[in-house]
Length: 103
Image (cartoon, rainbow, N blue to C red):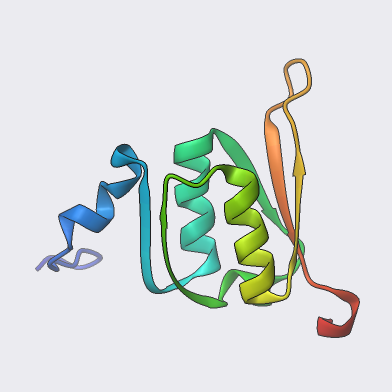
């Protein structure tokens, strides 16, 4: 490999699952799940704490809407998951916040 590049195998079904209404994660950081939510639901995601980005998640979401997934993530991580719908030219936003006891 060349410097700065790495070749590795990926599971194509997991990488493209969002196109088939499926999000499948195996011990992936919450930040990775947030990127998938951005693609699938056209939302921006914000983290108020770097620690939240690294929380490992194993989950398989199939057919759930964004509100259900956020509730499941809240229950799994203990983080607050707030959704602000699109307003005018402003995009919809999901904010992941640590609860007061987590800080």
